[in-house]
Picture 1 (cartoon, rainbow, N blue to C red):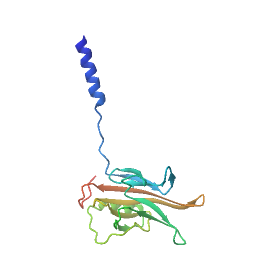
Picture 2 (picture 1 turned 180 degrees about the vertical axis):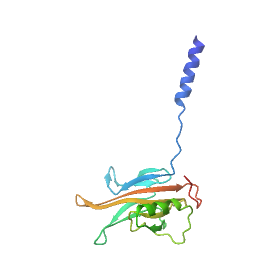
Picture 3 (picture 1 turned 135 degrees about the horizontal axis):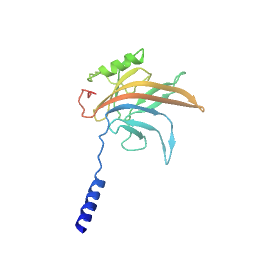
Picture 4 (picture 1 turned 180 degrees about the horizontal axis):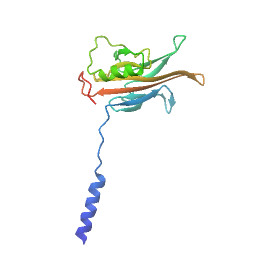
Length: 176
């Protein structure tokens, strides 16, 4: 009887400590905004493609991209920025509608860029961009929607985007 109890307890201990680790996703649809928070310092949330999640700008390493509302002009405009100190964005196209943008995004299979930009600027719905990280990994991004308005006297920006990340650094995006 003691042996049976020990076997059952050992089995329970083994099975309760076994956790299946889900792989990090390499694609999705996510939203970032420019809301500023305060803890011991001011920070925003950006997006990490390698981590597939929102990351505070106060963390190390920080996010791959953040959204910024540029108010230098009469009409504020949205930009995506990176903090890797390298030109990191390339616009594949600015499309007339969601269907055309989605088709271009889905058909984009490889990266072939001669000239990178410092920012994704200006940022609008129905655009397709390529992002190159500081580690030379690539992400294709389709801008699903944007919000660019004033809320409580403060410039507010928001971007919902579809993305596919290529974690191995090759110039070919993974299939579905």
